[in-house]
Length: 79
Image 1 (cartoon, rainbow, N blue to C red):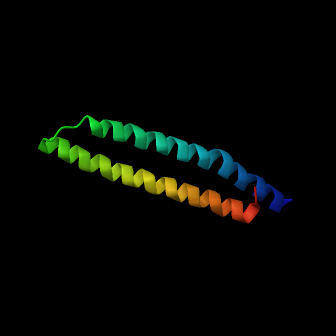
Image 2: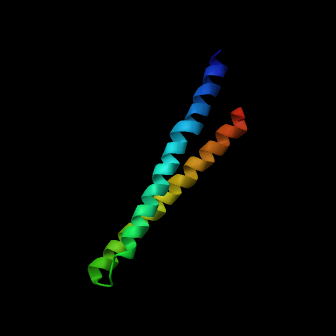
């Protein structure tokens, strides 16, 4: 029974929680990229651009980690 519960919990995490994490992160990246388009070339804008670019990289890394975890769950428990 415990193995079955573990499988159900892992699949829920994969299909619901991690899916939401990925969708929200992708939406954030899109929003940040749109904000970057409005920046000029001043020193402040360049500093903002660098900070937002770092944020994009961080969010994209989180997406990769969530996708890897989804794949790991699928390998272990199947579809």
